[in-house]
Length: 414
Image 1 (cartoon, rainbow, N blue to C red):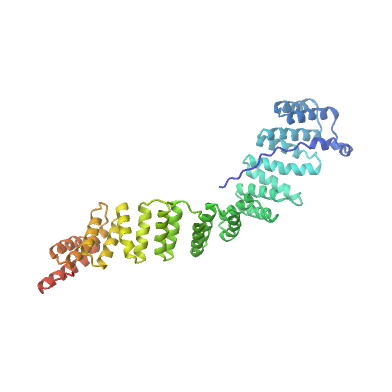
Image 2 (image 1 turned 120 degrees about the vertical axis):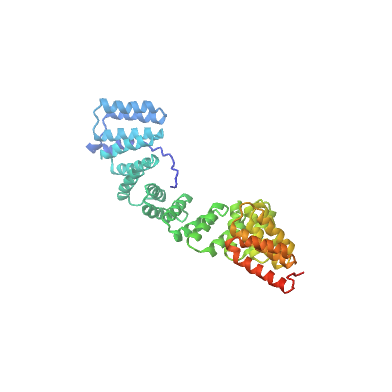
């Protein structure tokens, strides 16, 4: 699950001043007696000076000795909540503020603000379901939340695994301004991806990418989204553009681009991409890179480049199949000694599979027969005949050699 950071909020202690105002003093339920006011003022002053123990002691004394009414209790719990939040004791702060809210003895505006503050604190305490509950209650009494508030609600719903709710409020946050914050876009993007809604995710990522074209991760994520949408052509175009922008920097980036060109049946460009990256020292040659280059030149029928490339790849990877491809190219060029050399290199690899071994023996036999060495050819075909996958082909060649010799003819091609 994605993690989001929240700014540690130190709530402003304004309720005390509000409670002591002349207008509120006229309401009996909001009256604060002078001794209680004095204690609250001392707690507030201690909080202001970061004397948290002293502030807590003042509140505890008030609650034990002064028989506060509900309004005074609410103010005390509220102040205690601010003391805890200032120490980043978010769970304790949430519980204290919740106790203040449940008394329902503060002005309406303060009550509503407390709901949001409590939700923030539960969110910071990773109590996501409680946070969502408070935010939902707050939304019912709030007419026009701003983008930051919508984002906070969306983050809580995301963490509570209410992805549809997270999408709803992330969209509200993004729609609240012409210039939404990056964090809002990222949350909406992450939620769309979690819900596998890749098409709208592309639209959001396009905004992010336009803002931050220098970030490699944005380009690769766009490629991944188009892949999920089965739009390989667009995925290739995005990755190619990322290369031109100079943001591709890792081996896997270039390998993915080359493989996408292979899949698009443009193998020559696949090979050239890796060759250029090697020249520019953006990656180092290894068996994986060498194999893609060799196979790409082979698929492109670029034999001049394929021969050294496949040879290098076969040596680095000790890959018998690559040696056989090399042997096949030499066979087509009627370079019989090179066919034998490549095929025997394949046979010298210890973990060669039976099917590949059979093909190698057949290639050796053909090359030997074509240069007039029937004894060596017969030996190779006899070995191939012992392997089920190459038995029939080998037997046909053995018969062909026998008939040719009986007719006094030669199979040699100079």
